[in-house]
Structure formats: structure tokens, C-alpha cells
Amino acid sequence: MALWAGRFSKEEDETVNAFNSSIAFDARMYRQDIRGSIAHAVMLGECGIIEQEESEAIVTGLAGILEDLDTGKLKLDPNAEDIHMFVEAELTNRLGDTGKRLHTARSRNDQVALDIRLYLRDAFQDIQKLILTLIKTICETAQQHTETIMPGYTHLQRAQPITFAHHILTYAQMLKRDYSRIDDAIDRMNECPLGSGALAGTTYPIDRNRTAELLHFRKPVENSLDGVSDRDFCIELCNALAILMMHLSRFSEEIILWCSWEFKFIELDDAYATGSSIMPQKKNPDVTELIRGKTGRIYGDLMTLLSMMKGTPLAYNKDMQEDKEAIFDAIDNTKLCLKTFIPMLKTMQVYKENMRHAAAKGFINATDCADYLVRKGMPFRDAYKLTGTLVAECIQKNLTLETLPLEEYQNMSPLFTEDIYQAINLETCLKERKSYGASSPEAVRIQIEHLLNDLQKLEQS
Ligand code: ARG
Image 1 (cartoon, protein in one colour):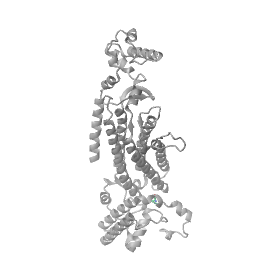
Image 2 (cartoon, rainbow, N blue to C red; image 1 turned 135 degrees about the horizontal axis):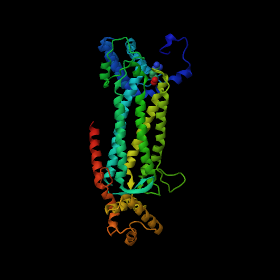
Image 3 (cartoon, helix red, strand yellow; image 1 turned 60 degrees about the vertical axis):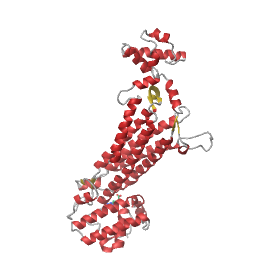
Image 4 (cartoon, rainbow, N blue to C red; image 1 turned 90 degrees about the vertical axis):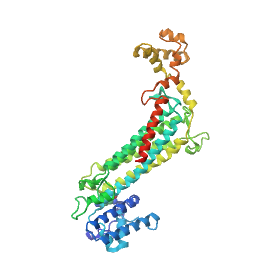
């Protein structure tokens, strides 16, 4: 029989019952639900709203339920409407009337608003740890490749020489921002909704500061309606995941390109690639493709949350029960992606020679040729134009800037002397790009050092 049977003259329709139920997906918050209820019961006892002994009995009873759920001794009832009802009913089974006092001065509306916050706080700690591991993995790979020349691209056209280290460190920087975006959202979420009641607070003399403190929140939410009716924190955190996945997806896309025969810059370890059911020669980058695919799914979760909230009047509406599946899906899948991506990156083989080979074609030292003329006194625009003509000549003669004879250079400008070959040598081009944050091995080593320092601070925080 439903909890609210007193008000109703009929049993709930079975289909409606199943439709309404959220236990299939909110059961994963049982630890947080019990933690919240324990804090509530402690506060009720301290404020004299229930007897001290009752408060203690409830706390012990809840701890017992937690243990029995953890060990599997207690099974969830799939017919319960949600995890909150299940825990309360089980407590009443165990304690009788005392169990029925737990829900004094509380509603499922503030209870669920609390549970999701607690759950997200825990879950995002795991995600942040994975982000740090990935940043570290990138740094470790980068340390081995500060001299590994590859073409840098714009418009996927060879542009200027960079190193493999410099390229992949870009993702470490993005991930550092992803990490701090999560920090920001968690910080804003750090207010306790418990005590908001159904929407209007309560007539009981509760102590909201005490429950906030017991549950390690900075303070209680200021407005009781706000406490139960917003899910902006879910949206912010899902947004942080969507951006993180966008970064991971771009990295994945590059890996997909790099392991193709057209590039062959890298090779995935056999453990992180798959074969084809028909083509015996195939080695496919399924992991990275799936990450690219799942990114769309996380965007979908974000859209679900945004759309769910846009038309709901204050305060709580049942629409908001849909928040959980969306944010849980985003968390689960992002975690899966990170967990697979990290070892895949770690075990990936880098083909330096192929990168170097690709860098030697495509005139990626043309800017350096123009800069050479600038150093000899020519205005940059003239130098740029003249070099363009040289490139066109090389293409026509099937030569590169390295193999174009000195006479041809000198035909174009008397400023060219033998040292042009040294100036356009790829190693020189790279070494000279030593401005802050640039590609030279020296600048990249500084970047790695800064990243590792930041990592250490974040790991200790
Ligand atoms: N299962 C519900 C949810 O997730 C709990 C809150 C129910 N509140 C209510 N007034 N029906 O949103």
C-alpha cells in the first residue's frame, strides 16, 4: 500500500506505479541518502525535535541498513517508488514507530536535492583524479618527444614545424581547464538544501547550519524554494563533462588520423585496437572512435537537462526526476572514456621517422625563409611575397626549399647567401621558436615543468 494511502480511495494503477518509480536508477545514491538522513536525525535529536534516544536509534538503524546494503545482505525492493522511500520503509520495518519519526521536518524534495549534490561531489572527485592521471600520462609521453619534429597544421595543411611533445601538451592544458571548471561548479554547488522542506521551510526549530556542517557544506542554501527547485549544478557539471569530452574527442580524432596509413605517425598497442571480421589486414582504432561517438551522447545528456528545466514553474516538479539518468549517464560514460583513453595513450607507439619525413615536405619552413630575409633588412610583406614565389618555383621543379640551388635563391634576391640552408633547416626552425609557450625543445621543457608543478599542487589539494 502506498505511503499516502490515507488521502486516496484507490490503489495506484500498476503502470503508473512503474512509470513513477525511480528506484531502478536512484538506488545508486543509497549511501548519500543514508548519510543525509543520519545528519538530519542527529540534528533533530540535538534540537529536541525528537528524543535523543530516538535519534540515536535512528542513526544506528540507518548505519545497519547501510552495512546490509553494502554487503548485499539487504536487497533493494524494485517496487519501492524511490531510494528515499525504500530506506525509510526499511528503517520503519526495523525500528517500528521510531523509524517513522525520521521524516519529521523534511520532504523528499530537499532530500533528493541533497542526495544528488552529495553523489555528484563524490563522483566528480573520481573524474578529477582520472583527469590528473591523463595529464600526467601526456606529460610523461611529452618528455620523451621534446625533439620529435612533426608538421604543425592549420586547416589540416602543413604549416610550421613543431614537436610531438608540443602538440600533445595542448591537450594537457585543455584538461587542466576541464579540471578547474569542475572545481568551480562543485564550489557553487557547495550549499546544503536540507531543511528547505517541500518548498517553504518548516515550522520545526531545525538547525540548518548544523546539518550543513555535518555534511561538509559551506552553508545552507539561502532560499528554501531555490534549495529544492534548481538543478543548475547538474547542468554545470554536465557541461564541464561535455567540454571535457569535446577535448577528448578532438584528441581521439587526431589519433584516428595518425594511425591511418596516410599518416602512420603512431601505432596503437594491439590491446587497444580491434580487427575486422572480414578484412584480415585491418587494425581499427575503435576505442577512439567510440570516444568520439560518446561525446555526442554526453552533449545529449546536457541537452536533456537544459530542456527538462526550461519550462518548470517553481518549485519542485516531477520532471526533475529525469535529472538523474542524464547526469549519471554522462558521468559513467566520461569515466569509461577516460579509463580507456589513459592506458591507450600510454602504450601507443610513436613513429618519429614518419613524423620527421612528413615535416620535411610541405614547405613548413617557408615562414623561416621569409624571416631570414627580414633579418637581412627586407620588410616582412616583401619577404613573404618573395618566398611565396620561391615555393611556387620549387613545386614546379619538384624541389623543396632545402634542395633549391643557391643561384635560384640569388636570382630572386641578392640578400640570400649560403647560410640560407642553415636558416631553413628544420632543427634550426624549431630551436629558434623559443618565445614563451612556443615549440622549441627548451620552451616545451619549461611548459612540462610548469604542468608537473601544477599537477603536484592539485594532487595534494
Ligand atoms: N524520486 C523523486 C525524484 O527523483 C524524489 C522526489 C519526489 N518528490 C515528490 N514531491 N514527488 O525527483
